Image 1 (spheres, chains in turn green, orange):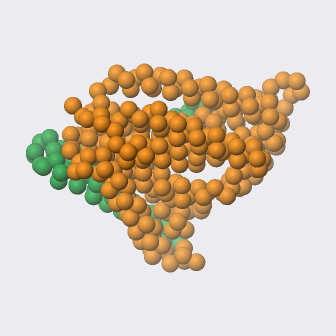
Image 2 (image 1 turned 90 degrees about the vertical axis):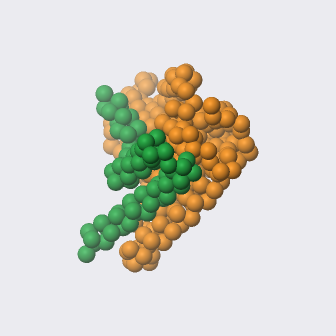
Length: 74
Length: 253
């Protein structure tokens, strides 16, 4: 049973390390989907938004972690 | 209908991502199996490894059959989103390690901790299989193997490249086993963080590419857009590491 639980946790952990990053990624993908399907934005602009959104999520996640560590040290 | 035309750029990226990602995971599994073999004997180490590989083969067979039934656009979208989450997670951790914010993964340290743990657990019975050793090896092979299976399916399924990606993963397995058998020690000199950084970059690029294709976005340059995304994430990773270092000046020292 503990093996099944451990495996389940490991599989979930593959995608969810930093809650913010996982949530931000889902928000970016959802926003791009809505832009494409509901507002008929140009596909190229939506693609650009997807790429920029993912890169932005990475930067914010790293920045948040670095500043949280700095705040913890001071 | 999404075009299934393969290009060199997609195939090379899929094989590279599968090879590098698997290299990291096989090294981690090898360290634990080596610890089991050294402390509890090779019989439970080999039995646990073989059972782990059998379970992984069953997962691959089930997953392969299920993926064949899904429409390609859904598959690309679902795998694309998971790949972005998985790739950005690897890239983030590698960036934080480069910045000195979290410690580097040390195979010698992992081996030391595993051997110490295995020495304290005393249920070894003569002439019977050592279940603690076998379970430890089984866990390591299964858990690291699941990541390999995900990487192979994720980079390969969207464009029918599972076979090529699996070859990349198999090559990594053979390389690690050959090196491990030769040195008979944890492979601590493998530059794991650099590999994880590269895999994070490649998987994030694949994730954006598949997600876009699943949403019907016609990427400029077709499959070559993948190379552009790879360069964007590579640059983003380098810049993010610099930004993190500046946030904590002591981390540089």
